[in-house]
Length: 161
Image 1 (tube, rainbow, N blue to C red):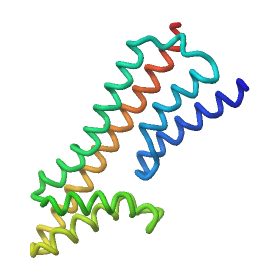
Image 2 (image 1 turned 120 degrees about the vertical axis):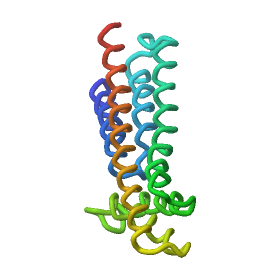
Image 3 (image 1 turned 180 degrees about the vertical axis):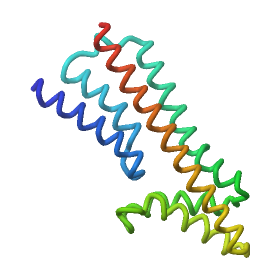
Image 4 (image 1 turned 90 degrees about the vertical axis):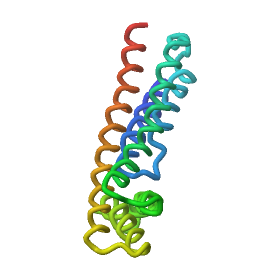
């Protein structure tokens, strides 16, 4: 049972990190759930209230930052609300439609399409698309850092207790 527990915890950490590449995967939720799996297979005794408070705060910050940073990139380059919405749709659908490049092309196509639908010229639409891609990369970096912080806090907590 111990091996199964460790395999599940590690698999959930991997799924969580892969969620930065494939947004359809439950990235931060998988990592958070890994803590419960560890507790069920081993013990919850090492986790006090401060552990759960720290991890939950990181989750909330990550969820808020994930959307705000991506949307900020679109807005910063003059994108509309529709561009933000269609870039998010493109981010979810893109990796499945265009497996190798969909994570980049999906939001780009979504944002550019939104701007063209609203009557903007190609130059402005491409500028908004570029801002969307920059926001996406910034969001991914923030997400990776915060998810690694979650795993790091968990490791420190386990080792220290």
